[in-house]
Image (cartoon, rainbow, N blue to C red; front, top):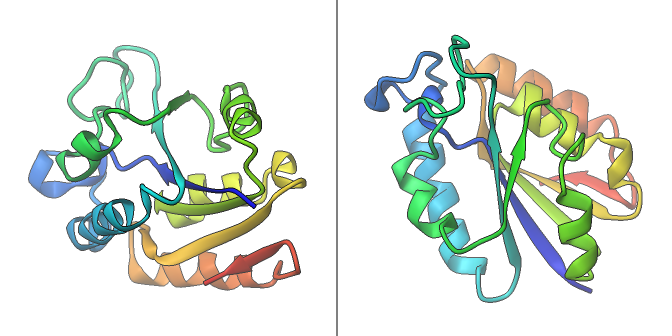
Length: 167
């Protein structure tokens, strides 16, 4: 049984202090908790960074922009880890994520990051997660507001099964 931690879209765009264009509720606190979790599990789990990009000149996550860069809270921790670049909410869609997971014999995926209602949810519910046991780490995710975060987690909990859980 091999575990992987997906760290989704902890990018400057989501942080007011990093002059992000789309600050999220409790982004700094959530990022600090994610960083601490990475430190705690990186010797026991495969840690994979996920970074969202849009074309240069786009209003959010434009390739090469400060907003698209990984936030300082996780950038150093993810520097020597596999990094998946994506252009869709689903971290599996048109990326090499499946290949990375297969190469390392991953059977269990833990998901954390930003935004709960978008990329976290779409990745967790991706058809490509079928072979894995998936856990969404609710305290290590955030959204534009606490209400949106809670609504997204409640919707995910409706999917709870032997292969999928929100913790």
